[in-house]
Length: 73
Image (cartoon, rainbow, N blue to C red; front, top):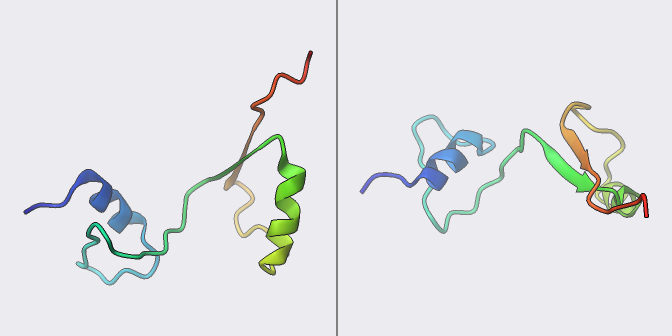
């Protein structure tokens, strides 16, 4: 049976996957996302960032910040 769309996408973005290896449902993989998203509660994310030992963002173009509350009213 062929790969599903999700399996193909996961295989393309899995970190450290050997050439020609496939990803199947149920596999545990580590994926390096092109973008990461946080919303307007960014202040709450900072302690988590520090808790994992992170001191800087490897790619400053990676984060995407979204405002998801009506702050005008």
